[in-house]
Amino acid sequence: MTYTGYHLSVEPPGAVQVETTVTELKAAPNSPMGHYETGLDLYKKRDYEHAIPEFQESRRLNPDIPANYFFLEYCYTGLGEPVKANQAIKALTTRNIPLATRSDAFKDLGFTYLDLDNAADAKGAFIQSLTMKPDEATAYYGLAEAAARCCELDAAKRYFRTAAKVAKSTKFKAQAHAALGKLALDMGDIATAKSEFKTALSKDPKQELALSWGRSL
Image 1 (cartoon, one colour):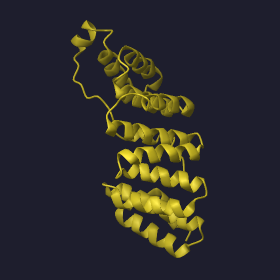
Image 2 (tube, one colour):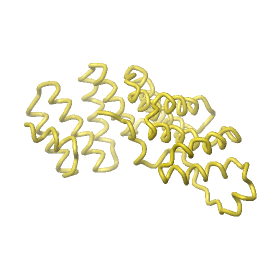
Image 3 (cartoon, one colour):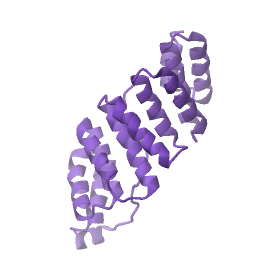
Image 4 (cartoon, rainbow, N blue to C red):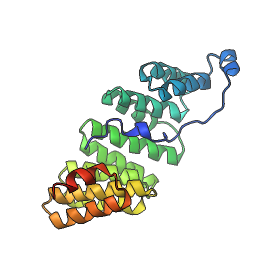
C-alpha cells in the first residue's frame, strides 16, 4: 500500500482561509498572504511546480503560517519528490505552533516517512501525533501500516481496529476494515479476512481493497 498522493484529496490541516481580492494582491505583491493565495490557486489547478515558489516566498516572509509547510509537502508529494515533502513538513514540527496543528504536522511527517519506506521513523512520528490528538483515526491507520511494515502484525491489527473505531466517516471505517482484512489474509486467517472485507463493503460497496482481495477468497 502506498501513500504517494494520499494528501491530495483531503483538506490540508492548518490551511489559512483568507478572502483576498485581486486588488489587494496587486497592492501588496510582497505580502505573505498574497504569495500564499497565489500558491493556493496554482495548487488547486495541480500546477505544483509553479505553486512551490509562491509557498516558499510566503514562508520566507512569514515563517509562522503553517499552511505553507503543509502545501509545500502536498506539492512535492504530487510531483513524486518524497524527500522534499518530508523536509517541508519536518520543518513545521520545529515551529511554535498550536497543539492540534503540531499533531497534524507529525501525522503528515509519518506518511512522508512511509513514502520513503522508513517505517521506524514513521512509527515515531505517528506516536507523537497521537500524544496530542489521541482520537486521530488517520494517525492510527498510519501507525498500523508502519507496524505492519516492521512485521509487528499483532500491533498493526490493534491499531487498524482503533482506527476503525474512532474514525468519523463511514468511508474511512471501511478503509480500516479492508486493511484489517488484508492483514488477516497476510497472517493466514482466511475466516477473519472474509469477515473484515464483508464489513468494509457493507460500509462502502466501492471499497477497492476489499473488492480486489475479497474476490480471491
